[in-house]
Image 1: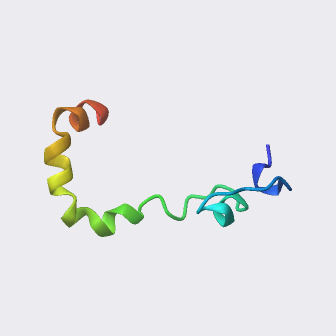
Image 2: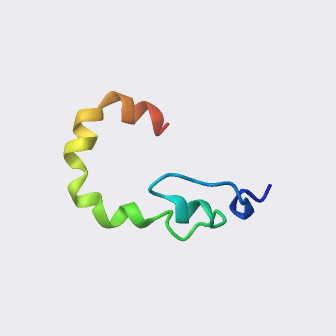
Amino acid sequence: MNFHETDRAVRTASSEQVRQPINRKGVEQWRHFEPWLDPLKAALGPVLERETR
């Protein structure tokens, strides 16, 4: 399935991203922001812990 090759109109903020194949270059990018994620982790609490198991 080559979704990124479609000629169909895309009306979203990420319309350019839709035109690119899926890749792994951004998988670990969140780690740059990890020091600021503690309040979010605390707010999610048990939900986050359940998802990581």
